[in-house]
Amino acid sequence: MSTTYKFGGVVEDRMPMYGDPTVRMRAVDDIVRVLRDLSGTKKNKEVPGVGHVTAMLADKLTRVALNPMIEDHWDDIIGYGSIGKALTHRVVAAQPSSAPVKPEGGEG
Image (cartoon, rainbow, N blue to C red; front, side, top):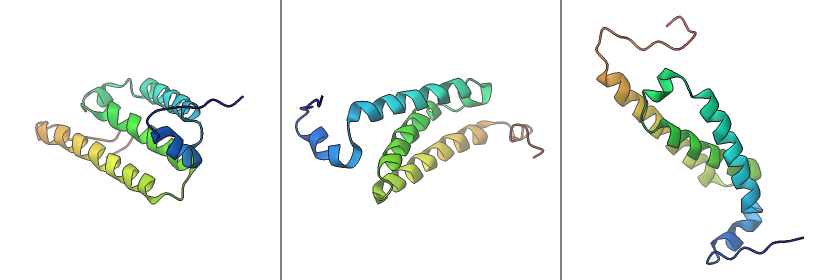
């Protein structure tokens, strides 16, 4: 059974590219839930805004999975990655120089 969505034409215009929005949004919710489970570490909580960045990356990745030929999706992923990097740099810059940041599990 097909459901018709009426949201000012926005959803209908994008259905050919992305399919049923409720299916993709459930997938985004599932990915965000997994990411939140993984990000319960102290390190992740030290970077304000990183949760939102990872949620937006999940959203963009589902769009890529449905249609990798749309260049804007890749640009958005690069953009959100840059935002995440900038947020992390702010935290690192605010740390005393005597406390270098080392990758978890790494030797750096």
